[in-house]
Amino acid sequence: MAVLVWDWNGKAALVLVSLCVLLTCPTAGGDWYGGAIRVKAGQSIQAAIDTAHPGQLILVAAATYAEQLTITTDGLRLVGKGAILVPPSSTVENTCSGLAGPETEAGICITGQDIELADFVVEHRKVLSVGQPVQGVLVTGFEVQGFSGLDIAVVGGQDVQVKGNTLYDGAQYGCLTVGSKNTHVDANNVASTGDPLFIGICMDDMSDVRVTKNHVAGYTVGLCIQTNGAYVYANEVADACYGAFVDPATTSAQVIGNHISNGNPFCASVPDGALIGIAMLGAFDTQVQANLVEGMTIAGTSNGSAAGIAILNDPVTGLVSANNSVVGNVLRNNDLDIFVETPGHGNVVEGNQCSTPAELCS
Image (cartoon, rainbow, N blue to C red; front, side, top):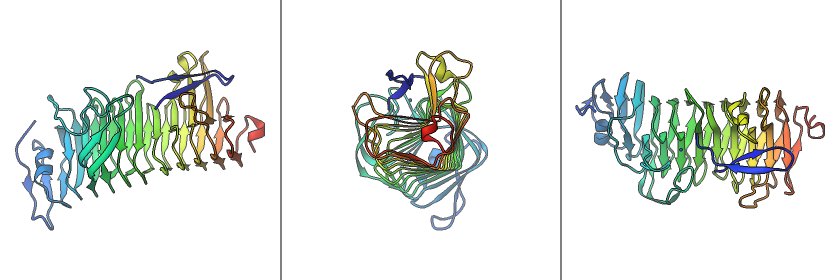
């Protein structure tokens, strides 16, 4: 994904943001059909994963675990009870190694079998094919901290749920789902605790991704939308350069009921920097509805510009944004509430509570 900067007078530039063990065995709490595997402090979560049967529950007790986890078992339910996952002293190679660039790793890698990946160019490696998806996995209740690439990644999954986790300081991504179907990313807290990092949550799936009720803060791009038909609902994004970014050629995304607030002033401190709450760049048939976008302002800086919602062309591919709908949103305390600069047909902007420009506001 290329990040757009704009001076609102027709000058555009593209900037790539560069800001992507203990081995004792766990105890078994019962048989395959009814019992959970319980992992206690000082034991290995991965050892439990490796012994689990499809559909089994793993309960991980409160403690700090220096591990990378790889999940390939269908139906596995991995539940943290105050468990904190941090990078181990030595890395473990799996599908997610190098996914977000050379020498990057993931904290939790949920992966199908026989994944064919494209070479890394920017952002992350694309999934070319999936031999066999991993199905029905749930990961919940974990705090994952400080992995070099991604805190949690789903690669070649189907019906995977990443729910109710706290993801801190994933250097390139808090959470990425790629090459998957029907991933649900719900009610996670994703944050950078220091300088802005790259992308909070990104969806680059084959179909049917749902990203709902997450809190994202301190990432350059809060929500990266690269899946046709993505459903992005009721998320809270703050302290970002781009709250939600709908990528070129993405079709029929739904961005509904989100709260985007308080753009990061860092973004406007670079030459021609920009803050945009919701950006559509060469996107088609996007539905942007019932969102609250506020605090996109460069006040106190001499560079850049800021807007609440923007519909723009993609100057790299030449794609023209068309048939996008911006309806029933509330925009306030932004330098410019709505900005439309595209010759694309069928874009509808109506019924939005805002003030600038007057002709696009009600």
